[in-house]
Length: 236
Image (cartoon, rainbow, N blue to C red; front, side):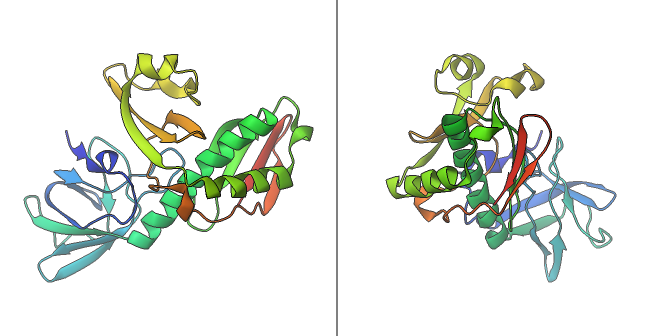
């Protein structure tokens, strides 16, 4: 089983280049013995970057999940199993996704606290992010309240922490959010990654995040769309 090193790295910003060995080649995917790349999941896009073999440099596209993280390239013809490579993750892309993901956690927490809304979906992107919210009464939603609350919170300089907790600890914690999906994770996985934004949010998450919210941008919601009874999609 491949080590998913991104899960052990926090903050998830400014990833360093890493060395690895190619252990499998499937279609146009390279798979390594270890990888620090974040694979697409949880609404967050996978990493992109460059794979180096000697003088050869190949860009890889969005990494995908699996038993071994898949690093897609246009052609695998010049690679073989056993090759030792260097992988450079696109820092700007990763950093933007990490900032967007931490922002999403705060927005979801505030929407829950202010309006009683539950986040039922999200799609993170480097340019914009959308969050799907479910309300008992969506007339309570107010853009200005959400934006101002978010922007005020940034001045608290809240740190972002990551833990590995067992299910019982997660399910019994009175401040834990977003635990409905835990029954979809195999019981053989005993420890789960939990992200805490101190005094703001606490929830299971495998994504990349910043070290402190003081580097986040102010929130500006650019679109609100109805998605049916009691549901809104907001974009920022």
